[in-house]
Length: 102
Image 1 (cartoon, rainbow, N blue to C red):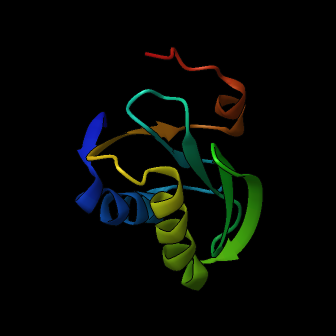
Image 2 (image 1 turned 45 degrees about the vertical axis):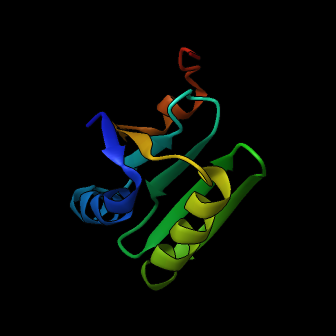
Image 3 (image 1 turned 135 degrees about the vertical axis):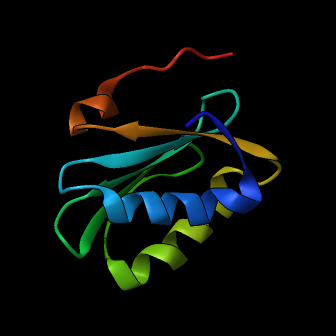
């Protein structure tokens, strides 16, 4: 995936995470790629949320808590954004990659 409207990004991320196997995940970046949220499926009903931007934090949440935490992170990291970049991560090594900044 590439640029996605912010209104539909939450739904697309949650649906894509259901199809992921443990160890895979989704990376959401701002248009400039200077802030981001990484969601990694740790277990069948556990997820790891990594926030890099205004706050630097890492949370471990269940599937029930995922939607609410993701929405609050998106509001904090992408407050005025209309579009976000969404990438699928095949493994956790993608967390260390530096994306080209615009």
